[in-house]
Image (cartoon, rainbow, N blue to C red; front, side, top):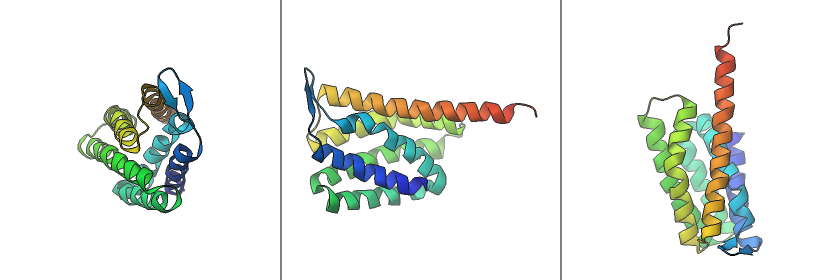
Length: 160
């Protein structure tokens, strides 16, 4: 279920970049997709828990769908950015033996700025407004997942 939602979210956010005009701000264009993209990273963390390293195949599938349904240039930017961020995530998930909520937090410190910069630069959407808003959106999503996992961990640790 999480993996399907993850793929759908990638295609939807990529579509939003091409279909919804940006708001002009003093710091440059700001896209609605910059605001909601953080949820893709939340879904990625859950999908990765669901299918492990096969998440890369789901990401590739979303890139192929984006290629045919949205725009090849957006697909290339999206796939490149996700490969970079997934590689960072994979390294953190594979080589650290920390609890899940810490791995999510640590991997995000590397993957989020890398993904945001790569996608926006390659897609031609890089502005200070877009970069900072998208980074903030992703960080909020990651901290939400981190917090929910922390709460669940505490509940499991309470004596019955």
